[in-house]
Length: 281
Image 1 (cartoon, rainbow, N blue to C red):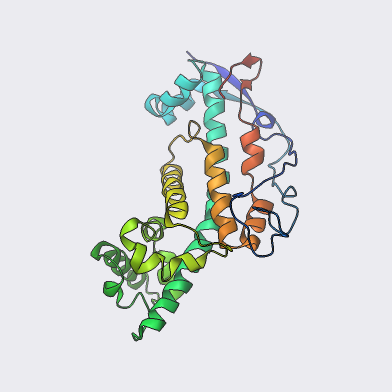
Image 2 (cartoon, helix red, strand yellow; image 1 turned 45 degrees about the vertical axis):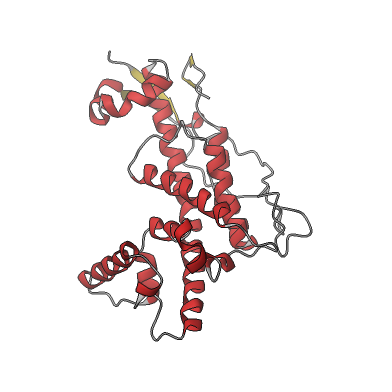
């Protein structure tokens, strides 16, 4: 069936409404003004970058579905109960929320890997070994993680770039850092080093971070492979990001909240396109 769809961009990019965000209520952070889970600034105030003003464009849905493929659109069709216009609207919203989450995951990932790098550097220094922790990681890491570091070095050599600490850290995947929080590293890495990356007034149990990182790693991979995320518990994913960011630093969390588009796009999950109505929540 060939349907010309009037796609309204203002249905996907709603007006921004300020909302109050709260972090993990079980934590009291340094500089949190005595309020559990709250950082020092007003977290209701954040900036959202909106696209150009709303406009109406005609889309040949048959052509579009050919290029996207019926198989790819299947999950969206099922969520839209067969309404192809609503399905494409949900696909567009999935693009928007995926992009917004990827922006926030960018901030979290960079902060996390640097925090872990600082702690591993200090652990290496205290151990009395020469060089850096990533130069001879065999005494700290499994062979698989050591292979990750060697592959990062090879990529840098292939690009004719020096293997500086910052470049090696950046070359290592989010999965590499997530796997450093698994149970096998509890005594070797978590207790002596990695738990100190989190600026909380009470020590965090390893699963408090590891479980959240596992979920966020899955989210990041699905986004990177252009998979649907609309059926996930995205509110929980957002809270996972806030929890870890706040545990790292109130400043990281406040900056993340100020720059994010996630809450506004979550609030605008499409349930109508043009004159059609359909419940997708």
